[in-house]
Length: 295
Length: 327
Ligand SMILES: Nc1ncnc2c1ncn2[C@@H]1O[C@H](COP(=O)(O)OP(=O)(O)O)[C@@H](O)[C@H]1O
Ligand SMILES: [Mg+2]
Image (cartoon, rainbow over all chains, first blue to last red; front, side):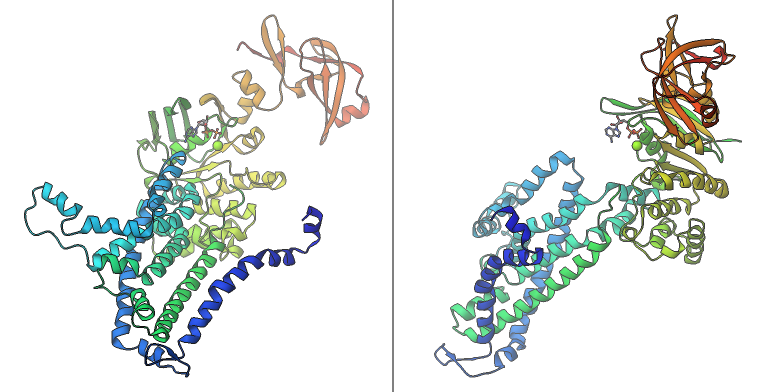
């Protein structure tokens, strides 16, 4: 389109037009399937696994069954722990990278994100090799003279958490690095100049100004962890069922699509709630931490 | 007046760059002291050493007779007003000002009253609940000042405090700062690259060049008796010409147009005229130097005997008004 034509189209119309392909894509591949799944959740499961088209709320009632509610809680706990660890470790790493000399930061970031460019399954299998009863860690211990029983590490909740943290850490590092690297170093100096200790400066100046990054990273890890089914299946050995595994089982083995749909909807509701919360945090701090024009 | 601060042969290097080179100076109690120099002359580095952000490689910094050169910034009775102001964007104006007292652990009522008092003095009370990004440049500058002043430091350091303001506001703030310094009775060390600003505000001025102290004295001393050619050129306007292998310098206001009753007299051509408020400034080309002479003519004198571009006029001076430089 010639430049003049672009110019005569009003700004608002233009941005709407430009958004059409993305919106169409999202509608076709996200909204429609989600709508179908949502509808599915209100039907009954047929006797032989099919769908019986009669309206019911039983699938949602079943979510409150202690067995399933328990799985939700377990998933939330595992995802919560993974999030906590990932945020602490990721924030520390991002802080260290942001404090390094400017010219060395890109390479450090590159290394922090490197694992992310390999396949998720391969990365997870690598942990099996490490945590196995006779895996690398046990062998390492043997080399150091350890004689006893090999420690059981694989197929534990800890293994699942380690796997989740490992997989999602790069996101947290990136999310926290962004606001940390943008922080004016003179703010920390001003705080120190006014009498604050290093810890007070961190708590009252650095941390509040980087909350949006933490929130973004945390929501990311939590949302992806609570719905994850590969890591619990591989590193938890099927012993630690999370919601993701349950959904997977409903659709692919139990053939109870309506209940699977209800579980998915519950999961989506949790995710949407958290993402909204995160957007609100970002919105609130954006106004406050806007870069000042003169400086 | 007793000495509050002694900078004693202080040197600071950054790699191969010697930012501050064996600088010594004394600042007296309650003085308004200015560090003046062109960009890159080491002014900020001196200030950062006084605040504790840089540690000198050599020399000592004495405050009230005690060596503080290795005391961390949060334990010095010294506060710095940053060139960028460095206000905390997530805190209100009142929050920014209270911060330094809160981290000191003062009781709440005392904090409230001191913050209220300083906001009255700096006319910030109406903006107490605003965030820094809702303030004008001048208001932000006052918040930065109030935040440092409320700590009641022994020494307040100001790094180009008026640099971000427009010219008119700056002139007003120069007098305002001087009045404030007098009222609060705190010693000020201010950094500026604006010689006029330093002369207007300061009791004494230290002139830095390439990290070295060139001269230190009252505005009158440095203006009338510049220590070298650099200072003479940097402070105010100075005409230079070579005579008998020496550099002779004379201020524009010491030159007399039409050379009535002066010891020396030369002819020159007016190549440019410019109005500077009440004065007319003439650029006069002569045989003495390659640069034209800058000559001041009062409006009154110009009315009596008009001078136009292209005119050939005599200018004259008395030798007692000249300075000789050998460097
Ligand atoms: N942190 C630093 N690292 C390297 N060089 C620096 C640093 N700070 C200042 N310098 C150098 O020291 C010299 C003096 O700088 P500065 O004190 O900022 O001067 P001024 O404030 O007078 O403009 C300059 O050459 C500057 O490049
Ligand atoms: Mg500077």
